[in-house]
Length: 235
Image (cartoon, one colour):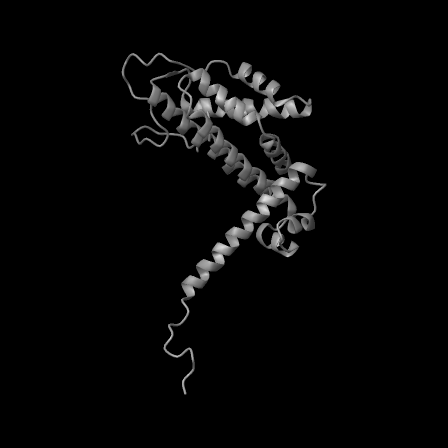
């Protein structure tokens, strides 16, 4: 008598690989979620690999498998949180109909959490761990490029006249925001106070007067024949 499995199709190796990759991505995400929460609460030195594994219902060996070291996990968690914040900032600013409201939405969103301060710690860590610097560099470039794209879209949509190019505006925003927030956390300032200081430092970004020559504001990613610089979130 034949085996009960005779006639059954053989397992698909590609399906098994996809399932394994999916499980791996889920575990990495769970570890990053747990690490982010604990690092923000206790800091790098106050958080152990065992603590993170327990919080994620995982094994310590899984952390070293996916991230190698606690420091690498710290930098990746901070970078991911920063990109999540940038996305939330852009979404909040989409509701604005004036340049002033747009800037207020950006400032209120970035100062409402400790994510920027968390990312600043990752920046400091890479000074001693240059092997982790590429991840931070990629994160910063995404902040700049995606922010420039979002800002350019708003300017074009509402017919604002930007006082600076989108790329410059985005880089300026994040540079000032990181500085104001790091100083604010160091001085124990409330988020409302940091928001006011950030708005003061940013000043006016654009006016509601549309350009007179009718030229379209160049969006990041538009193709043209002139040389362009590389860039990749907010303004």
